[in-house]
Image (cartoon, rainbow, N blue to C red):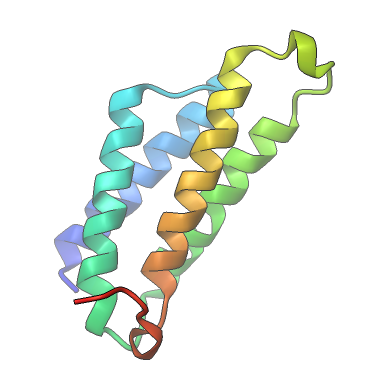
Length: 112
């Protein structure tokens, strides 16, 4: 895997996580960038048998951060702001993308 891609993915995830922590929200552009980079990373990591520990930590932490911010709303569902629904959707999408990045190459279930 290219070092430049790894650094770009980590930087993008850090920026996204920071926005979510500070605002309990994110920009659509930011989210689309993170998703695109994670898809690129999943493709690049398909043949790798080892993943950088810092990258693995960042990948593991991102969906949890978004999930925790989603769960931080403690009011009723009827009055929950839309941004928390967005956080829930982002958490699910990011979790799936991260799992794809961390999937061992010998367990690749995608079709050619």
